[in-house]
Length: 117
Length: 115
Image 1 (tube, chains in turn green, purple):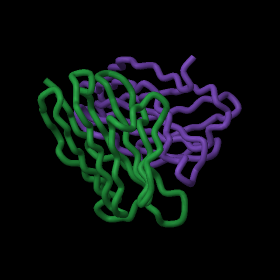
Image 2: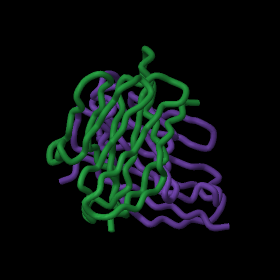
Image 3: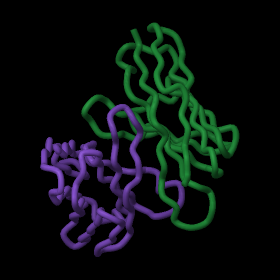
């Protein structure tokens, strides 16, 4: 089945530093990937849509200069949290859908637990 | 009012019970409906998806969509301790295109199946 790999699974960083999270589709090509954030005991909230070869589309209220998204290939999207602060501590999850024709479902990575100290 | 409402539970049932999980939504434009299971500190795992009213069955799981009432359900038969997880309903406006990934999630229901 479709597999989405996310790395790292957990990261702890100091306030003011930047952290990069990778999202890979392992057995399918994804022209579009999605980044979600999930706070404890809350649901997933879409942050941005990552489009291969073009700029990402951010949801209202999400700072594009703080959450840099790069989608350089059909199997890799990265999210960089710049100048991280404790309030950025959260569970970040990427998802992807096959570029193949048809209504294929969305598959999620296992998430990255970010803790900013 | 949230676009998607889901009772957060927690829900605790004995092994073998039938579990009923539900979501209501307010946006009649939602067309594609999904149920995900999320274990602690893991990403959501797709269980069921459908784009029409009616029932869809897969093993012990049955998804039900009633668009007229804006109500979806997930039934788990013969529940097992391994079913203990958070169950999230999700929906989108379209079945295809980039807007597909703009899922709107329910809050999630925490389910515990005890032996």
